[in-house]
Length: 71
Image (tube, rainbow, N blue to C red; front, side):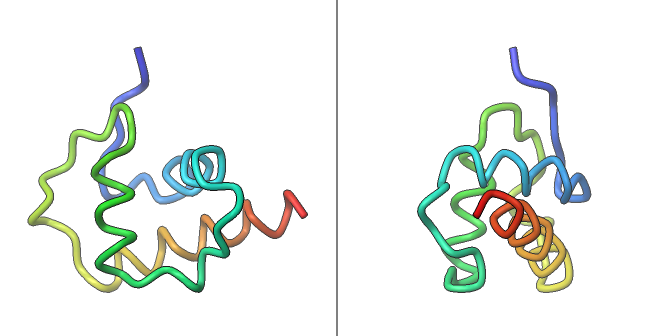
């Protein structure tokens, strides 16, 4: 079973997003879509209503770091 993750686990979420969507450039993703991607991750237990722009920016940045490393 996947480890439980929440909104503030941006580095872990970034890794999982890179594994699940390796073909997507993170900074091309709208926050509404990023929100959907995150709440659909295995092990995600966060309240979908508890995200905000700052949290999504941190997740997108962490994902982009993983994406850059994978190039």
